[in-house]
Amino acid sequence: MKAIILAAGEGARLWPLTQNQPKVMISVAGKPILQYVIEAVRSSGITDIILVVGYRREKIMSYFEDGADFGVNISYVFQNRLLGTAHALYCAKDEVDSDFIVLPGDNIIDSRVIKDLLHETKSGEWAMALTSSRNASKYGVVFMSGGRVRRIIEKPKESESDIISTGILLLTPEVFNYINKGIMEREYALSTVIQSAIPERIVRGVKTEGIWQDAVYPWDLLDLNATALRMVNGSIAGRKEPCVVIKGDVEIGEETVLRSGTYIEGPVSIGKGCDIGPNAVIMPEVSIGDNCIVGPHTTLETSILMSNSYLGSHSYLSHSVVGEGVVMESHFKNRVGSAVIRSDELKEVERIGAIIAEDCTFKSGVTLAPGVMIGSGSTIEGEKIVSGIIPENGSVF
Image 1: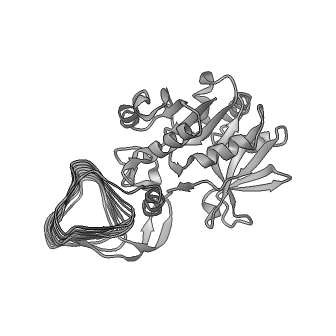
Image 2 (image 1 turned 90 degrees about the horizontal axis):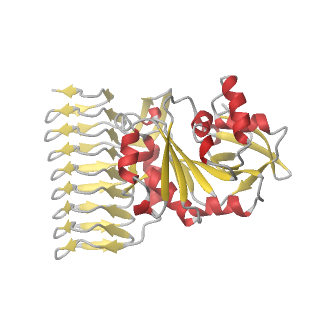
Image 3 (image 1 turned 180 degrees about the vertical axis):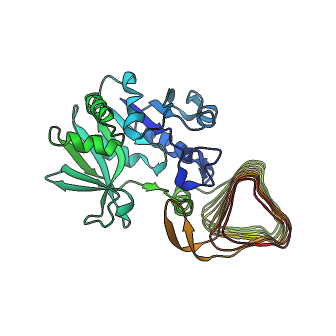
């Protein structure tokens, strides 16, 4: 059996983090989101993978290449016009001639989701992996009877059910006939195509207890990161100076140095080649990428600090997502609180710090208000208090 992973989309609602990379390549707990999907597919026993790529596809292809380093065989199909998930799947129609699974590449999952789907179905059947959500109206809400999917409603304003589609499906090549018909009618969403087939095809609904989690908006990445960190097994490959305290599940990469007096409480993931401390404090649910520097007397909690970033001395980073190559000089801090943020619509977020895209620079003493979003390549001069949205290559003097 083959797996088709849909990884062509931009993830526009995750701006500014997707300005220069696709959503599937955003790093959580030290790995791109797409890598969790590929590892789950491999762990379920499937090694032949077709990746449908489009937006910034070179980022995906250069990282995964032919899949050999990940224990799978990867081939690529291009979606040159990003018309939707059904169209993306249709681009791969020549790659399969028997039952296959299709998965979104932008969710964190474990192999149980796939195994549940395969275990509960027979050859030639269609099936959909389902889960429960307290925020069902953000997804495709599924109504069932007798183990069959009867109706799918995408993002209803109010939901009468907490059962949602994970977007993970077991299908046969017959689905391409329905997709072709949908494309002729300018219907490009895969859920709409499946709904159109329900009167003619049995689509089994398989409730899974496996891990499945999505990130719709940038602040959702903090929850995604927390979920991924629960998969971390404590391992320390770096070097500890005297008087370093480590509690819980903490993953430390090769050639990372933990300076004297540093305190780390897991779950935490720190990549390769980092320099932490001295006297730094890293609290639970923090991910630090490769080649990062965290200065003396600096505190991080519930945050993602991506690779090649610098967080200076006496700084404080909390409930924030920071892209690659960001420089935050000494006495940087962000405030945490509620904020109303404009994305595809106004969103009220109860507890948020800052969202910072790649290659930004913050001079000493910068303070960021709750919910600030800063586009890539921006520069913030010292001692400034910043709020709201700063566009790409923006400046605050």
